[in-house]
Image 1 (tube, helix red, strand yellow):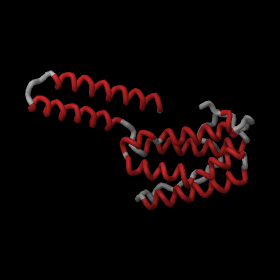
Image 2: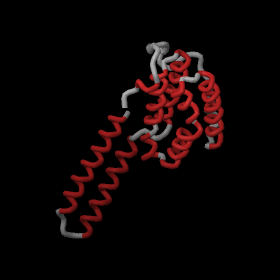
Image 3: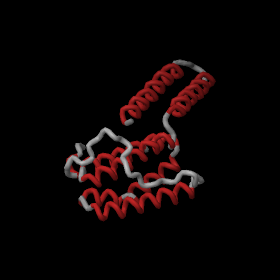
Image 4: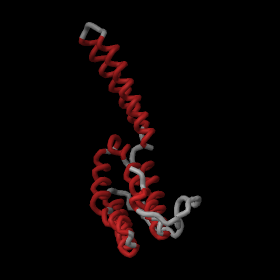
Length: 176
């Protein structure tokens, strides 16, 4: 997801540079104005292809389930990794849905913080409580935002069946 975002950012920058070079060559204000409108349309068209909120949120849900499986199995590095990339998955929404992203960011740094602290402490009891509290918070938020038809349930199995969630690890084992 990060590589996709960086490639998209590069593409937007390239399009902007080319458009500025083209419009900068014209002598009239009309050409520059027209060029700026074309550039804005190109930026808007590219922005429209970036995932909004639902697609990144789908990844968040899978990583959230996998995080629980990892914590239950004692694979604390995987739990920390899933949390880190769960948060990173939402970064496109910073561009495409800034108001919703603020809600996500507040959730992740506030409400979800006890989950991350429990992972760091390798405290399964604290993790279980914080994880359950997060599910309740997610459901309350979904309802408040008009998505009461999205109700999160704690899963008994992880989203990714091909991962060893019982591999013993430390939270700090995640590369930076």
